[in-house]
Image (cartoon, rainbow, N blue to C red; front, side, top):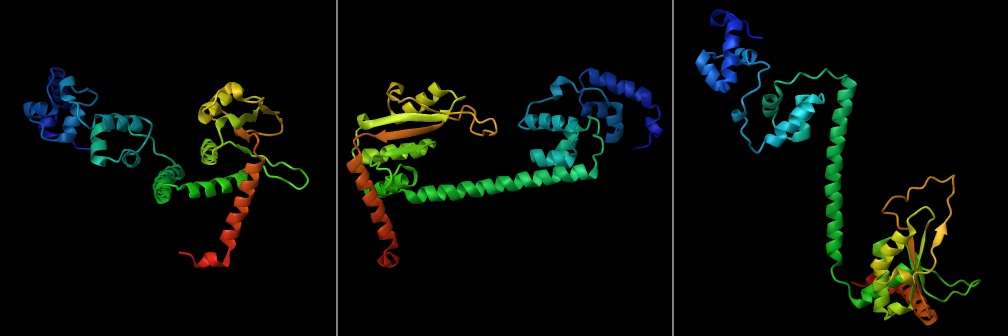
Length: 290
């Protein structure tokens, strides 16, 4: 701290003059020139606790940062922590918050935890950018689908998720159930490709008994482009008190089952196409194709 002597010896008298000038609306520079104070530390002490006049608070692009910096300082953050949070210089931070009390020194282990958290948040942000880049590249690589490609994709999707005929239970009909709206959209688009009219489709929702069943039916009906009145009775899943459910909230809409009536012949075609895909993929000649 600068020692007060010489022309600053009558500090209290000088402080009264400085505060009076401040309250008249003078800026720091004007007060400094009026009182011949050429030491910033002395000037800070003379004006300590005295707010600046409104006209000196000119709005600028950094006003939001300034307010955020002051808020973080009052929360107990150091200059380094505020700099990491806001990305501005420590000199600016010092200027913005110098009138605020210094935060209590944190326990070194707590500071280390905070620093580690910031580094991890930064790392997660970098990973997320890389993740989104990979997804976008894969999206762009697909491009447009031909009818044949859509046919193969739909057959594969059905054989993975749809109902299948068993030797012990003859079920040669198309029945598909899924909770992913995009999967349902793709399946319906595939049925369009197979020229299955919508009036041959029947729908039913499978959902937990505590959920909003009418809202779920409305959601799936809008997605499928049909009326909720065409839906069959919902399949309600009873509550198991031993189970902790995670599929809750407004986003939970259960699963949609799509039935195709009079579809025995179509089912046989799908099954035949599936084994055709398998045979082509496993063919020794497949390895030599370009």
